[in-house]
Image (cartoon, rainbow, N blue to C red; front, top):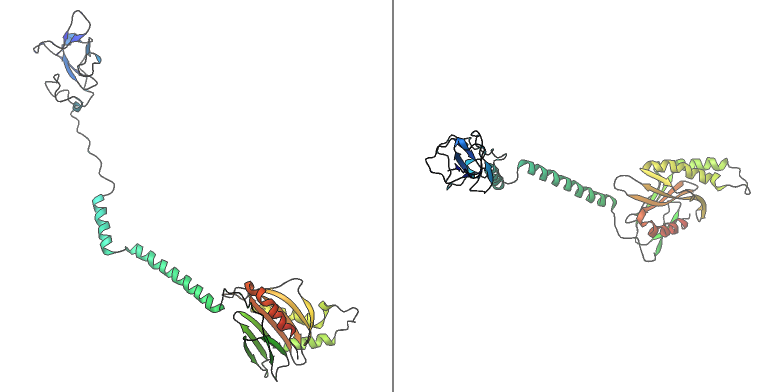
Length: 323
């Protein structure tokens, strides 16, 4: 209880319990007080926080939650007229039902992967299978070997048949296939070592062109130009036909020249090519030869990364071609 002290402007808190009260208020710390209306505007010291208070002139609405005051306060309201009776707000429901989510996960674990996961697994397995099959098919199609070419000096053996009007030497151990000419199919011969090939194939049309060009050539020995010779023009003509068998074909500039070999004068050039799916980059030599019966196209080729190992072997075979 609070009474007015006439010797000071402060109220005291030891007045008798039957002293009339009419003003009710709280300190900011939560302590509640009732004082006589005659003490409105006077100062007092709060028992709880020792803060100086001023008694309001009119009874204010409570500004602090009643829970802030301790249950043992000796200055309490004697009725509920000033208590904060507003209901306590309930917490909003959770955005995710945690119990349902946990139970759903447990069900999925029991049932195995979901349909979405199964689809991803199936697609991934299909992609991996396709890549594996592609690589295997590529290796099989090209018979590719990551080993380099022959390191030891080659021993050469003779190739000659009665019905083919050319002969040559080839490395011992190479696989050899050939077919003698029969109308209308021209003769051919293949020499193979893994991914290295030497192909010699006759061309009837090329032979006719070479014959016509030779008959119309009137170059003197002093004015002779190899690039304008009959064999050079036939070589250029055959390039246009051969390049149709390749996805990419390029004659290396500056390599075309006429050569004298036992077979006679021939035209030589170096090329780079790619035959398309699964072939990889190729490098090799191309030779055009003109004989009495046929004109021959010689193709020496191997994977580009093996060219340095085979180029000397190719040249040895070319320079051994005779009749």
